[in-house]
Length: 292
Ligand SMILES: Nc1nc2c(ncn2[C@@H]2O[C@H](COP(=O)(O)OP(=O)(O)OP(=O)(O)O)[C@@H](O)[C@H]2O)c(=O)[nH]1
Ligand SMILES: [Mg+2]
Image (cartoon, rainbow, N blue to C red; front, side, top):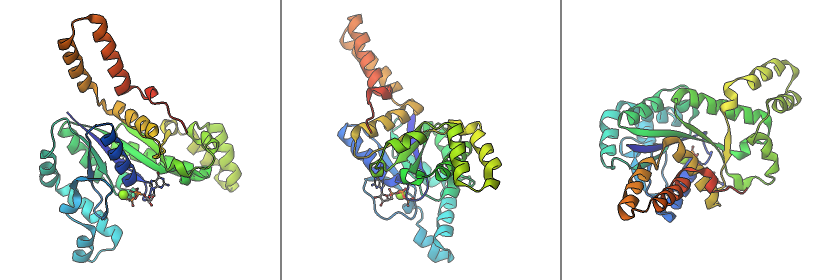
């Protein structure tokens, strides 16, 4: 059983920076993760690249060979990825161990997770290879300076959730740039009634019916954001443990640990205590209180 995060979100939302900080955090905590670059336009990396789509195709090559513009070039590259799942991806995955933890740093074109099936097929392939996959959707906290932008971010996330049909964690990135954290409480625990009145106040009256329909969407209540401040290890750990929970990372490890503890000690109270400590630190996000 392998584990994977699919890091998605609009362009510039902080996906690659998140991957790099996550890698550093895992190094510090002596945990092994591998970051795979799926962005054929990426040139510089702040993390060691365990596998790279550029070895298959790059946007520059696609643009030059087919006379495409950057967006067309990127979509072409992603189609190439889709067509090479059984060979290129298969070969790359063979380089990892069965229970490895991979983090896929995706491009920011929103069509990739709204209406083009590339990532959907990619995920299905990973699942066939026995990976537990979680979608990690990043939204720039600067994006939600007003309620309309917040709703638009939620809709994008929702469409990724519906398309990918994966366990899904929404992250509000770049929290270090938020001056007044209190302003965000409103969005982190949104109330439909308050959102609606705010929307109506900001928009022309002809949108009132649309606003009401949007805010009352049942699925809308499933979109919740977790703030992430990369300056704080506790914040990274909190987000990571939420994602681990979603993909049940640690369950197998815990079983193995349980067995090895039992082999070293036969005293039942000690076994229970050790197990409890491990379960708590591996699974429970509350063991890493988040301070904003
Ligand atoms: N202050 C601050 N800046 C950040 C943070 N995360 C990312 N940035 C900046 O935001 C910009 C975009 O970050 P990236 O990590 O490249 O974003 P991305 O989502 O990978 O972008 P694309 O790959 O182009 O879609 C860069 O200038 C980063 O330095 C953060 O947590 N805080
Ligand atoms: Mg990037």
